[in-house]
Length: 291
Image (cartoon, rainbow, N blue to C red):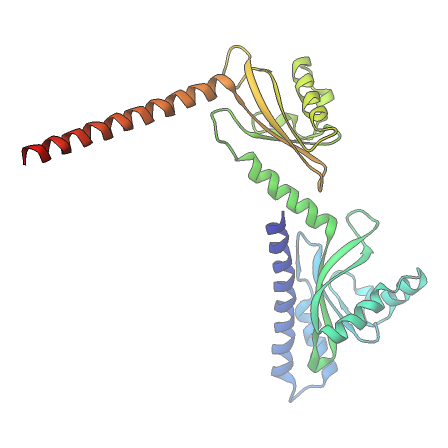
């Protein structure tokens, strides 16, 4: 999770620096022949239509009075104080605090609240802001924390789906409400609550998984389970772990007969290797005696 968060921070900073470099290059190109206002218009046109992060990321430009100079997805905010006035009307000073903050810092990560077109509600936003000093403007690129979280979760579930360490073993994920998020061998269960699964014995196992970590962080549970391709149910042990940050229940198990078989196989390999080393040592000893 922390690694993925670093990647997203890196992406926000990269996008802000990318926009900053576009603006600075255009300023340096035209500073001797055009006014700052004309240069800003060129910069605005170069930013127009650029989106990222599934269309929810874009560039914004502000001056230090709080005026919106450019808005990547809504032109009605441009060249006016609509955003600032709207914040003041709600009694929210976070936008003005951001302006004061960045005036001192020049560039930094920052978090604030803004209307989300995804949920149609006010949500937490995280962004990277940077001052374009020659033009006395602030460039902002940001993303909604809920969308970042959703992206992280999707990335983690994709990785989990491909994890395996024994035949027919996999990592299984459900949330605290019993909705199945990842099941490698029963993808038709994903998005469903376990209570709606037809087979009673499967519902009981999922219920045991949830109950096992109701009052603790992790647990081992034992039960009968028919593995993929097997004709009858055999003993299985599953380790269950809570991930409170996302209210997930993560579990993974192994059929005991397969585990015992693997242990026996490894034991035989070690024994064969030990005998080989013993024969080799005896052969060397005999050769030394002859010499």
